[in-house]
Image 1 (tube, rainbow, N blue to C red):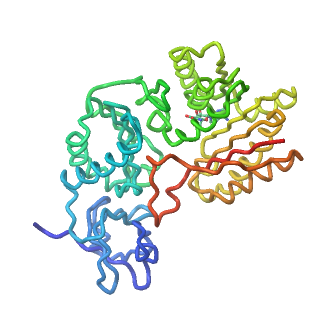
Image 2: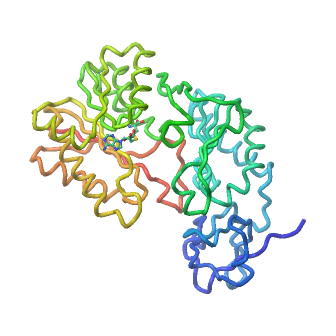
Length: 394
Ligand code: SAH
């Protein structure tokens, strides 16, 4: 067996990787001629300028994150057996957490598989590869997925914007079987999702526990679910005994799935799904002095990159301000951010400032993130991207 080529870090660089993080940035890498000549995604051994080995990773000279580690030994071979072992660890954890096979099976670095996300919907898996290194390993990965999970349907959602940063093309195709709409089981509710045509992998498992919590306070309440997508929170609230639920979203296909899910769960009579722009609709409802016992706002990421931080932070503040006006006395306001690029304390501060503009008294009663099928690498706090806050308003 031939050894992997070695990529070295510059002298005194690699602060994060030395501390145990699974990344090194491109500007930390010594760009020798041999290193420059490596194809994007090449599997390499990673060493410091003093020869200290940090492990095996894959390298992309064109990406800001130049190296992502696969493990802390040199010459790890990322073959089918390697992937099968990692997938089995990932699967064991989820099977310990959930009674049914509906979960995020792989959460990238959080499961020591950088550049890879897999969501599982029973017999169907949706695979998202975001790096050149993982794309080059697709074959052994899919063989291992077959061995460990034996899905009947495998959809490759290779259409995330992050792929362009890695020099990858964008495509969606079935590697096995075919599907459009499937059932998702979550918190005892059956939802519909469109795995090939929907957003991201078709379903947002990250909010599972937060949906359950909001459902637990929804009995006899009126609920406004803003950015409802396919009705995750809305149906949870309806099944939790809400009196009336309105879901708002700008995506007509997502709303159609939400309506079908409501019908399948026997709660159509309580649920109304409306196509609207949230900021406009919140202004309109506020001006009309309409209120709801529970207002949920789970928007798309407003801070897509670090340079958007100030503009995005203002959008979170505005959403909190407009949302507060719609909460009835003694009601709840749920606010979430799925932006990697805003830290939890900054997000909480913007929400507090937005609520504060209303002169309503608020108590922060719950601060959470994604569910446990989204593990966080301990040295990579950015992988805890989801922030969710629940306020009780006087
Ligand atoms: N809460 C959902 C996930 C929301 S994802 C769940 O539990 O599954 C964000 C959603 O916001 C998407 O469905 C997208 O269509 C919608 N969206 C984005 N911008 C919007 C806007 N300005 N007005 C209304 N909906 C918007």
